[in-house]
Amino acid sequence: MPNTTCFTTGHLVTEKTPRRPGAELLPDDRALLGEAQNSPLISWNGETAQVLETTTTVTWTSLERAIESGGPAYHRKAMTSHAQKLTKQMMEEQAHTGLWKDSRPTSYNTSPATSKADWTSPASSIILDDSIMMEKERVAGSDVVVPDAVNSAIVQTEDEISLTDVDMEAENGGTSLKSTQNALFLYALKEKYTLVNDHAIPSIIHDEEILIKVTAIGLNPIDWKGPAFNIGVPGLPWVFGRDLAGVVVQAPSKAPRVKVGDVVLVPSTDYRDIRKAAFQEYAIAAHYNATRIPQGTSIHHGAALGVAFVAAAMALGISFGLDFSSHTNVPGPNLRQILREVEWEQISADVRDECLLSTPQSECMKRGDWIAIWGASTTTGYITLQLAKMYGLKVVCVADVARHGGKLHEAGADVLVDRQDVTRAVEIINGVTAGNLRFGIDMVGRDTATLLQSTLAIRKSGGTRAHLVGMTGLPKERDHYIQYHSVPIKTFHEVPALGESLSMWLEALLQNNGLILPEVIVRQGGGLSDVNDALDLLKSGVASGKRIVIDMENRNI
Image (cartoon, rainbow, N blue to C red; front, side, top):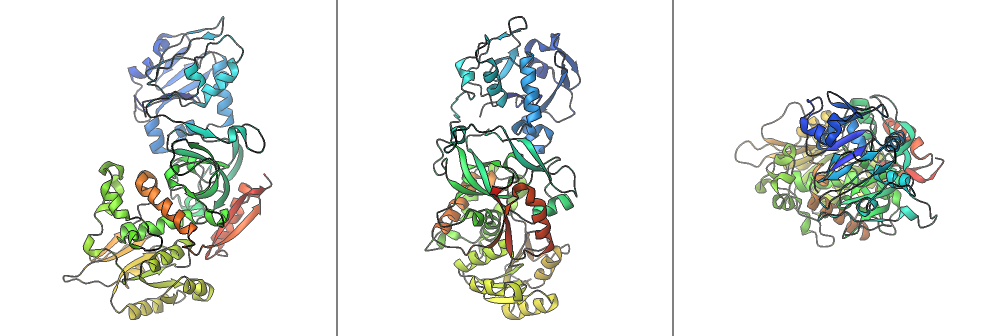
């Protein structure tokens, strides 16, 4: 995508002059407004430009930095209604129209006397700003000249973004897609989420993105642990939520698989992109991260499944090297092979070793190996058990056997170990596996990961290492002969080939009834306003072994 210049929410965002927040304003930045450096309309002070006619402060930042940091500037993709009105006001007072050339405004050519502006937008530019649409509406019937390129709202280039919008003229109502929505915001750590009703519906900004009307939200422990312990909080205020399902209302015309009207589930692993969060009525996703939900599978079960499936598949397929392509009925992807074939730079540096170097071929998991899952009754543990059994592994499940033993046995567990007496649990695992347990996955936390570590077979002379995945923490004291793993979950959205392979495999498994779906507790009537109470229920442990799902269709708000 070419460099872009966007005016929105009082921010000028450009990729051509990236710099860290707080850095000195560059001369070239002032040139972005052409004559503005010497214009009576603009007063410069450090990194801010005061638009004198509207007394509206314009802050400069970098799009790249805004995305990376997830800070306030990121709201250019999710403008509040207040900001939208402010931006429109700026236009009306002639401080927000400009002449674009090569993605940059080169001059202000506005006459206050006639309210007439000339626009140009060459093919090398893309305007990604909802304010353009507002300007179109404002000048309808006036003497402001707006060229066809701007009228299209998106200026096509070789990286063409072509969207199909079903909700722009809704199938059953004929009403236009509204500009704002209900959403839950976290304003401070250790606080409850706050419902707002004027959060902007997120905009598509990349040609692989789709817009989803959220109809069900699956709750995860991280949804309450994040705010409580400052885990995965990119900035404040912020919108959270990792699992959603709904109907596609906008999609790229060239998307090979996902179309407008499809019912999909999406694991929102890209938590630094506020547009993709689940706790809102509309959310953005990459089409390759969406799984179509087949007829016969409820949307509530779909909303409960995404993150758990991705985490389970990556633990087995990347960290332990299990090749899913060998299954005869519903073959899956060889995740390690996919990662070896993509460009090196596509894999983030902080997970590159985990993806490519952590498990040599000689140590990869194979049919007949033992694996122990501590916390097997969790949704992720339950999916891990099923995937492991598909590929001929022998599985020890540690859980509350009295409560969850039945469903774990039905899913194929070879050995059930009760978690109530952890010392006894370790003894049982050691006795059953007889020194042959090389793979363990802990779903609970550091303490149980440490217990699981003590059951792994350690061969100090010439043997292969043992491998331990900690979904929520790893032992403090580590053994040189054990390889420790954290699931590289970000590769799901950062490596399209890998994300799509998992999405398509899950789709095939659902179509062929290849998974026993987790139990769900569906909360109806409250919508987003019910999330805080539902998270309290999740935190209490009452929903152990089940996934709580918020229904967004039959709601009061």
